[in-house]
Image (tube, rainbow, N blue to C red; front, side):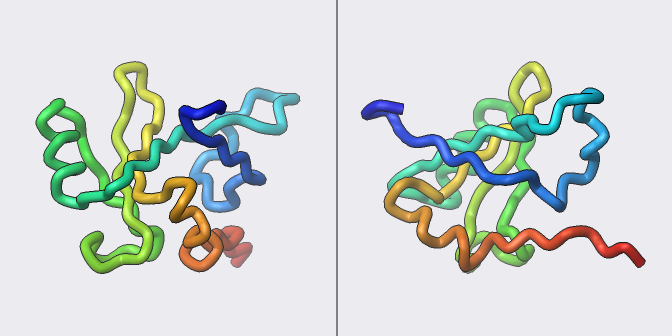
Length: 109
């Protein structure tokens, strides 16, 4: 990504609520794009999203208060309905990911 940033590509998300969105024969897809912001200011980021008339959903991975959670991000949608994440995770903080993001496959019960 040159001097503009990084890209992180991971395996499929076992928590994806609708893996059927993948067209037949396609084994991968991008389910969202995330932009990391530094310095991160939880309230200022939310305010700026809301000032732009965007619906905001809190994502702290495990739930709970975003102000004290180790993982802090918001989700919104682009004008064409694509999932857009605004996150505290950047190149310098991405080492937090393995300790806070531990997706588990859905239960087969």
